[in-house]
Length: 287
Image (cartoon, rainbow, N blue to C red):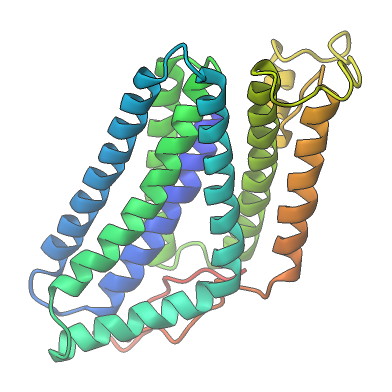
């Protein structure tokens, strides 16, 4: 439940940022709200189709290469989440500038109104696909659907509320820390998913264990406890990892974490469009 709440919170927050920038850049444009809602609707529809076909594929391979399919879902989610964390840090500022320019072009009549629908739809589809893949991976790992739904609703509510607060400039003092913390949480979660994917391939006899059990700290902290579950969510804690699972975990942490540290800063405030009172709309958080 905690894992899906964190993922949904971050992805919804990124959708909220795109929507916020578009709304600020098109202030005064008739029907801009309806256009944004239309984009959100199309993005959600696309995310549902991804879920539907993933579920259909899962049923088709049920009992035949199931572990391989499960691993594929895990590793696809790992790639998507890793790309999002690194790309947004590298290009967040350029993205904000581009969205402002698109909004200005729509207001001036140089671009079609439906460009707004496309921009919002693509953002929603991208983040929605990541949520779907992560949630599906959690279900494959044995997480109950009720926990996935509850976690998703918590993340949705949290991401929406924080998105509104960022849009109205109520979180200026914590913007930098907010995105740094959530980015590292995603990196740890991604490393944990990579280890789970390795476990599925071990079950399919496609990868060796390297070592059956690198350590056993279940006597000190098991996954069944509240603290153990919390560390599993935040750090990908596993009390009995195999050598291969540990190798995948460390590899993702080194590669994705290292890339995140190396790329340039993002989410730096771009020149925000002016509101009717002449003040700038504060919609882009700093990193």
